[in-house]
Length: 198
Image (cartoon, rainbow, N blue to C red):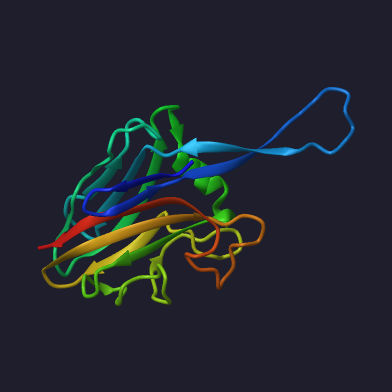
């Protein structure tokens, strides 16, 4: 079940669907697969400056998962005209599960998409690749040489303010291709951070 929140911004926190084989003793018939829903309670963006400087961390925390509590979303504040390597990590604190590791294992079925306020970055330029044909500087690829997005590269522009959105899509069964977009597959995570470039 997906959660919806409205608190100055829209956030959709979905689930990662993982196939688990069912087994039975003495049954030679094909084994059915069951979709097990995973809750993602924590999403962390870590922007590490290339060269020197302290990492900038932005977080999303939804401590009760599908419960009634509103998530806590930190601001994202980056230095102007600076190149960063950004890593995304995801965790299910309720079950103690490392969701990042699961995405790495199933990277040919997952891709992160990004959108941001125009002018926020000098590389990539534009507004990102959510709902459009913009580019993102992906640093990690799956076994089919298609982008994943757990690691990306960003160069900020001049001082400004806006938003930065991250969407994780689950695109199984051949849905993930060189031309698949953010409209393909199930949304596992969609989070919008307030973005300040200083």
